[in-house]
Length: 464
Image 1 (spheres, rainbow, N blue to C red):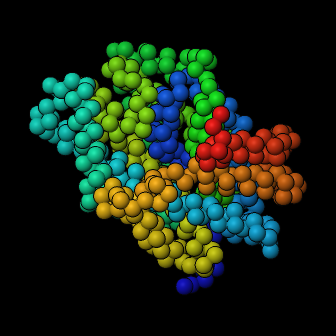
Image 2: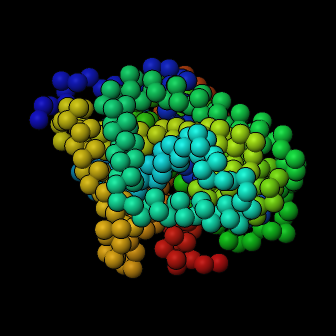
Image 3: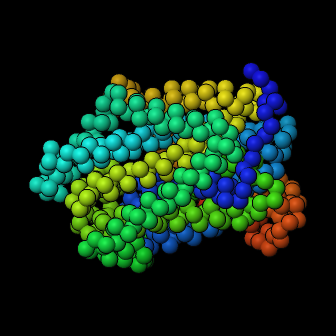
């Protein structure tokens, strides 16, 4: 293993590169798959308003905290805490982030592989529509067809493994190229493409007969639908949507040049993340209502309900192809950022060359990913605490990310010197920090309380 001092520390080269990469980290399946179905289950517009409040009041301050730690230390999550508080056990918070990255990347890459399966299937359905006879099926028959398709794929032995491998290798090839020539370069390409595809889908959805009802559902709040569970769901989604708590933003923060304004960067990333989530809702709900489908379809919304809708639309499988291509792009921008957490840790703490660190990270995550993939067939009877490996990994972010986020805001609010925090937020005096007192108040008191609620809810202790 070669010492990493042979490789100068890379960084982002432009403001757009910083925002594209960090927004790419935040924007993923959570925005286009999870956000619409949670919004659908929680009454639409009212949930959206509560969510926006939490993004600004909690999400942005926590993101800024991670950026502050990363840029101040210029290290991976473990090395950052070691540098800022040497000899103290705070580095365990960084280690928790790295462990979280392993677990999340393992199951997330499996789910990302599902989007590739649907991308290929949409082409097959498009080329030979008469073979499947979608036009003669009613809604119930279509739902049964796509349910069977998904079940047969998920429980198959080789296709899920292949698609998992493709996503893993593609992600590794980008990360191995470095921060500027890999992560930033591809974020600048993928993020605009993602936005264009989403806008095309929105235009198509809004031109459907009956689309107006979906727009009303999304933007006209009915406050009678707000329950305690709605608030908890909105708080949890705001937290997870921004990639907070697993060291991704500490790692990316360490690559942000000193001249960049961390406050405006965090706000821009949060706005981009929220905009994409809302636009995804605007692409989905008008179509849902136009075809009289229930908006509270839950996790099945993307992989079963939407294919039903596409099959009813003129040139529907073309739109299905565009949608699942969009999902692939969103998934990869996130897998890149999570893999980079592990690679940065291996490079700097184990003194490995980036190439070797990336290969080791891919192999180790690949092993965990295979365990997840086989949860529906070979390992279907293997249970840990009553859950399959995939089920356990899928549930773990509800605990690991809030725990990491809680320690991060406590560290910035109570442990780091206020002068150091202000220096980072002002970029050593380049920018005026008008919000300093508000920021400190939020990370000292408001964010820890809100994150603790998410954490206890994830554990099942708090069920209000």
